[in-house]
Image 1 (cartoon, rainbow, N blue to C red):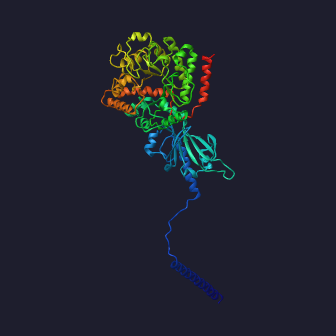
Image 2: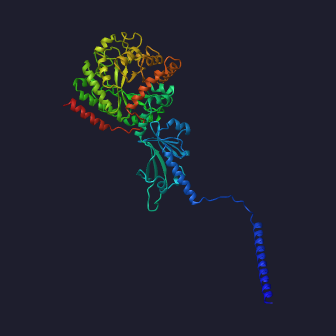
Image 3: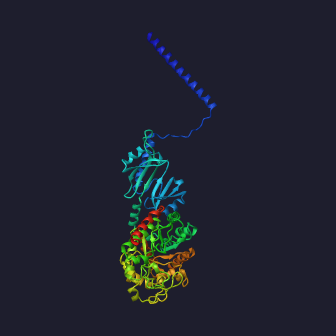
Length: 575
């Protein structure tokens, strides 16, 4: 009886629970139906918020990628290689920069859409800076976790920045720099501002040296090669359209400046820096001037002038000549120039010579040789290239080659007994450049002046005097040439005869005509491209020897230069 009662009680409890469950389900369905009538259902996108561990993992991968790419000179999302990529490749890939700035360290070009700034030494990329937003999520601790302790820590502070720079060696020549705000108590784990993959200037130069000249030549177009063989004058004191074309379109190897290009030291340096910045060649520019002293001086700013060479010859002190040469080189270097058309090695054998005169050290071959060579070495001591001139000797002429073609009726034997002596000795003492004069020597070549004569430039200068450096013509716009020859044909004959550089001091149209004539001569087989290669190889060797570059220069200290000149002149001339 008790068992039956217990069984009925269990059944009642189960029934009650079942009814309660049914009521709850009914109420829930009613509420749900009511809600669905009041608010339409939206299909929300399936967004999955990344976990902290996923974010950390992605940042770690980016840090690892950055370190890995730095080993081959690159940074994430930028296709260029620090220390190797050239300006031409960057502009071809990315176009014109949004902003360009010149600094003491070189030229920097900003590309806003790529969140990048590219720095250059000459025309080679040496600094790749990335401001990518993903990189800016990386923290100090992230960097050290993957990269370990940096090889160096540097600091930079100015009115708007207080930064630390973690330096890691990427390659043997390139450093990876992580730039972050300095750690503080408020922010002990700062995030990256930007990264920089930086190749120092000396490493760039070493890499350029490692690249053989034949490799450089193989990458040069015909136009590039012809351009290197042109040294052109420009008009005025600013960088006009024609000057820009010479360096950007025709890739000329160098510029000659005259007095009318200069107003003040500041203007001169600005012009020089603009030319350097605009140079689109992979080879730096020759930046040249006639700064002999005496009446042939070009540089502005009230520089104390040196006495003419004949007065230096009267002193006849080799040490004095060396120091004069050193200060001439120093003047050029301070203005950012690198090639001086001095010293004059002409022997003033004709007192009535209208063009040489007191520009010569005298009428004695021993004095001219000794003092000229010491002046040459003094210029070289300042890492400025000297030019010995005017081969094979302009001192015996009676006509000014600026106006007409002088004729020298001397045999080779007679020249060797006088005019050639200083040139031979200077060549044996390491002359780099020889300027060949516009003078006719009928005993050697009845038709062509020395600057267009194979007999003079190849047979005598190259073969007999064993000169292996660069041969440059005197200015092809002088009367000695333009009054007697078509300037384009004259330039072609000059190159065929052995000159390496054609100097065109004036008239943009004449420069263009000479370039066009040389190109046509190569295309029709009159000049072989191998002949151009020989000259360009010598030009590259010279530019490398003096480590020429297109880096920005600062304004010269005129008072300091003048103090040095006055001290020298007082010691040797006024005591």
